Image (tube, rainbow, N blue to C red; front, side, top):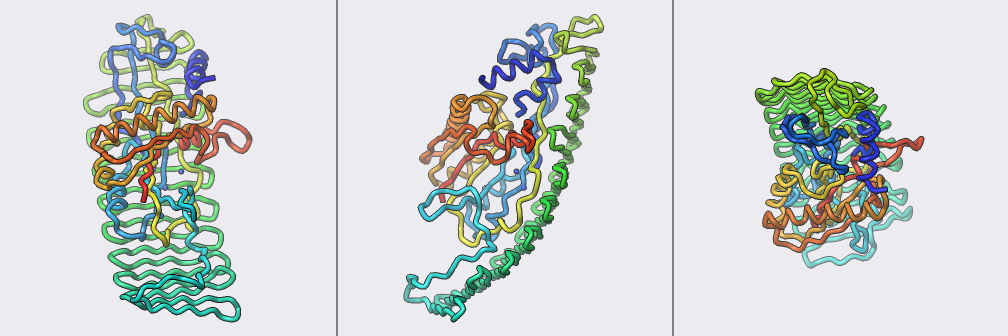
Amino acid sequence: MSRSNVLQRGMTRGLRSALFIGGVVVAVVVSGCSSSVDGTGSSSVDGTGSAGVPNDAANTITVTYPVIAPIRLPDTSILGTGGDRLSTELSSLKGQDQSGLVVVSATCDLDGNRVAAAPDVFTLTEVSDVMNVDGSSRVTLRTDKDGTKHYVDLGGGRHLRMTVHPDGSGTITDLGGDRHLNVLVNKNGSGEFTDLGGGRHLTIRVKADGSGKLTDLGGDRHLIIRVKADGSGKLTDLGGGRHLTITIHEAGRAEMLDLGGGRHLSVTVSRDGSGHYLDLGGDRYLNFTVGSDGTVSMTDLGGGRHLTLTVNADGSGQYHDTVNRVRFAFDKEGRATDGSGLAIALPRTPVFSAPDRFPSLGKFGLITPPCATVLNFAADALFDFDKDTLRPEGRELAAKAAAVLAEAGQPIQVEGHTDSLGSDAYNDDLSLRRAEAFAAALKEQGVDVAITTKGWGEKRPVAPNTTEDGKDNPSGRALNRRVEVIVQG
């Protein structure tokens, strides 16, 4: 059964069912799309209004919900790895905008194939007994009777010392040039990573259970991440005019508060896909809530608007703007029950989503430079449901990314991914069409490098599509729907 047929089937069951049929991991990102009312009908896959209401432009009120992208945690694996322009410029795109964008530093295996996970900084590899050295090197290598290996390089302005014990513990000290790098690894996997060189101020302290603290105060950054052993934690980012906090609780509930740059945005997310969104920035006042029972509540008072909407669990509800006041019931095709004859057309209700835990800090901080940089966009923020045409917000993000990618001049691969809803063949095709659409937008914006596309469908999930008890996991499926732009290193 195709994704379109699933949505169509859901609409025929009334609003409550349609909320979660086809519902859609270090910040919640919501687009600037405000609620609006226009005088036209809203078309959908079966030719009816988006809530199952027959299209009748003269008598249909169409409501627009805000576009909600998943909570995402910023990648810290590029911190302290060097000041190359690509990483610096891409980091500037990681603000809390409508894209749900997260920038990840990918690593490669010995054959040059990209791998998903960054290597654990707190597992030191064995020092090789055979190495190539240039004429300026002053390298000494000593192996103790117990197998401990000592590597020292003091040549050409370098000051590098490494000690690796047979159990994988050890130390690294690099004081060469403008570097000031120290790594301590204990036998139980705990350790410390400190990088104070070249204006950087990065420290990572990790316990054996994966809990710990990351602090990055270098340049204009002020980033602190605290992670507990159960995966709960808090991120605070006050650098560069930002004022962002993200909290993930043990039960899977997440909260975000963004007060930077004139914004006042708060979002609360529950594991079942319900949530609350409040935007008070500038002249905006948008209060939007999705309940676990399928209820919807929205108040939009910004920019001269005065709109309120309530949808009850049984599909009935009330709508009010400066002109219209309507009571309706969706089991009666959304027609007003007050005799006005008006119909209400609602879009598919957004699902709030977030990671259920912080990654272990032991997976953060690369000693070796990454082999590729990956821009991960939330597909729900770029495309309408089951569509492959970029929305205006998606084109705007493509233009911003293109400005950086064009200057980098590196080959690009654009890959599309879906959740598990629908057949394999359908998802493969949809993911490829979306990848091709985003690649075309980059080319239109002047990215004149080799661009290849690939559709993976549902084959490479980053979160579970179902819960442990086999139930649908709308939050996880939202994270799986994404478009990745891979920039080769």
